[in-house]
Length: 113
Length: 110
Image (cartoon, rainbow over all chains, first blue to last red; front, side):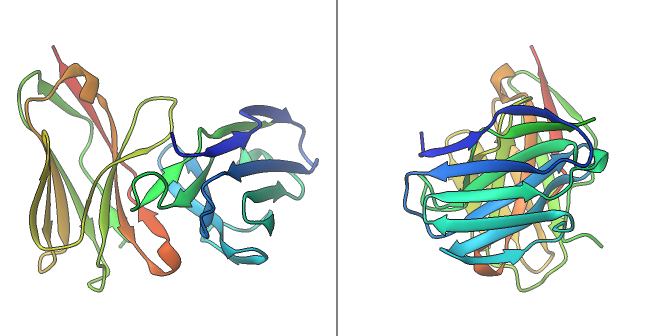
């Protein structure tokens, strides 16, 4: 398997609390991405990174921030969690074992109560 | 119009038959297209990519790209129960981003 791991795998949090999800890769890939997946919406891009300290917004970035201080780590923070952010979050790296397209992490199922 | 559309509802196919999935896209400048398979509760995994017009075959899978008509399709020959999954179509964008369709569920009936 490509070296990409997400943590935690599951999390339940309360409305209004900050939450940080971590994505770690061992492939030394430049590009990393955060998506959320919801029924009826498919995969939607939240933020992405094209290098250390280089990040940009996707189409559903409101309420989220990211940081990338090292090549291997890409953090997604929900600044003040809301119920609408209950979702499955996937991190992806570009290329991975296949050399094309993305390789996805196993996902984080986040529930905001 | 959404960037990538997969409009078909769940597709049920008998074991051994051909499953056919279609995807349309709105940006004529799109150059790269991908098909992912996602089992329930799992992450998407890449099964095919295609850049050129025409067909590309990989085992039981064939991707077909028609840039003039702006569609890409996936054929699964000799469908097996293990092919039961959701199939996601995606197109490449700048900065190596992907835009995904909502997916099509395939159910292979033994």
